[in-house]
Image (cartoon, rainbow, N blue to C red; front, side):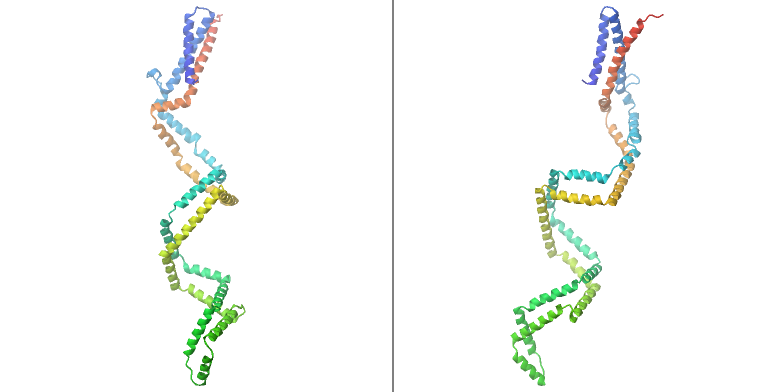
Length: 416
């Protein structure tokens, strides 16, 4: 039963009881009950008037000092705002609360609970699949090309090249490059078609040599003795032998070649004109059609791999996603200084934000209350506190009845 109805019933009971005692024959019990019902009726009416006068004019009569809440609306709002700003939600209490919160730990706990749910993981992976499929690679390509070309133009290519060359030389990559080149040359020289080409080339060049005297006679006799095949085989054997000698680490000529190779590399690195030409060539190449087609193909390939990985993990319930999150969480948990630093940054930012915007609490409350008309404000207050106030009426009727009985009994006591 609603408290308002109960209060009204208590008042009606007191009124009916009082009227019945007036109609009943006079005796001690009737007189005693009449005193109780009369006092209860007076108490109930008085409390009804008092409670009603808080919210509105009783019976619509503009009696002085009634409808107190509406008459003092601004004072009540200001008092409520003052209580919230200075007592309930003051800056000190908010700051103390914020200082006691471990934001990184709290966020980690919330994320762990979130990622521990299979449905949440699969939903994330589905959204990522949709996002990866939606990204227009052809539209992003010009920006990627422009960014790469701009980076190449603005980069200190000379310093980068010098660092790379120095690192390669320190790691012995120049020797590996020479051995690789010699190995490829040996393979090429060992081919039958190469031997035939060397023989033909040597024969044509020997025919162009003009020598006089005995040397000329001897040379012509030698040329007449050997044919293209013999010359090719001879040159092939000589070159293969020379390559084998160059591959020997103790070979004197090998060290000379490596030294010249290093000098040539550093000369290239320190040649500003050539490096600038190389930079322009690389930047222009990145913006060209061939680079565009190459990058687009790589982006599409990357998209396909990403979608395949996401789909595979989604079918597995997102175990890979959870493993990645767990790995990241463990790495972060081990960075005590980093966590402490970010805790302080987050806390300081929130405290500064709270101090700068604390007044907005009162502004927001006042704006919301000002949007409510008198009827809405009264209805809200009655809904929140009216139920408890109605019990004042019930208590007033009951207490009045008891007090009436007591006063009637006291009135019967003869005075000495």
